[in-house]
Length: 113
Length: 110
Image (tube, rainbow over all chains, first blue to last red; front, side, top):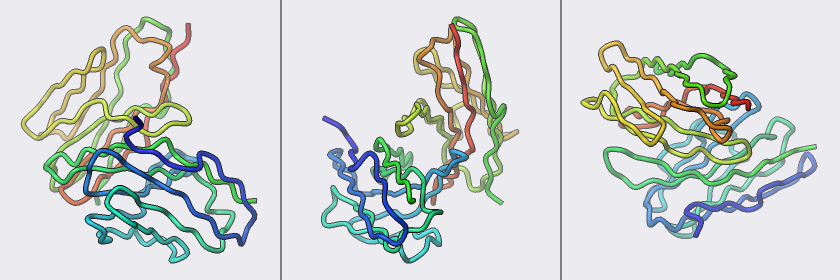
């Protein structure tokens, strides 16, 4: 009964490849997010989707593209992977209210060789 | 500039001891402040959320305080357990987005 799930948990790939990370939430939330956590453990927001519309894009490279087939899913596609893309990527979701409490997935550790 | 700073960066304590983690923020406007716990290899989990009018909130052995005048918050952990070993992240919501601190890495040893 995981609230926010991500697949895969680990992803090891070569530079230049294209990969996707999937995220699903069963909380009925209307907003989903992607975060990147670098080696210094700092969480940085990349995207958020509200009712299938992109509402935040924090100047990430256009090699990264979020895709939301429905309200419960927000997948992250990455083209032409670079060494600097190695990080842990977290998906999160929240309900639109004054608290905006976000529930995070378990993370996907991406390693680009 | 919206910033959230935490101290100490890391902390080592013995099991059973208490500890306090600090968070200072310069975020405007302010909506709420939350503390997250992140275990190694896992996503952050919310411990407490406090709005402007709340100055203390507890969740079991975790007690968070908020001083909106000085823009400071603390997270007090009582009778620490080995399972408290984790990173603790202070996050401020400014009605538009979350601003994350860099976290305090806590290690509890037996």
